[in-house]
Image (cartoon, rainbow, N blue to C red):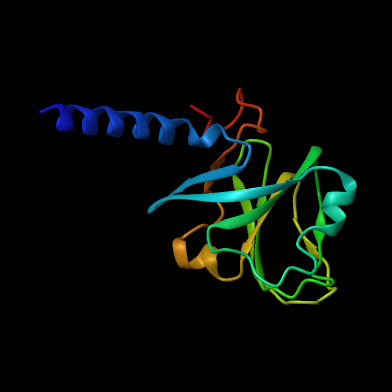
Length: 156
């Protein structure tokens, strides 16, 4: 009986941590038609970090990504200079809504990849992953660096 009680308490504790996971700076949680996805992320929030991005990286874990965060919402453009990985780019507005997904950006390609509209954040993940799991425009991200008063999927 004590073992069962300990297991239930542990399960409740894990559930509580999972509910708060969306509020961790190193995680991005998405909800969308068909499910939810969570990524362990690195943050690029200053000009030098954003300029370097994932350049030179030979691999990226399937549940990982890099979240580029800007001081204010505006149109942005990315490229794949010195980036050997194919990447998906999720362009995210100030409410946390995914407004555009660029699938499978070509490694080393210097062709600009524009956001097409004002965004506050861009998440780069492994190429093809967004389509495989159903992440597309309209998905909503939960992250503590969004203004929680206007976020579509606020932190708990």
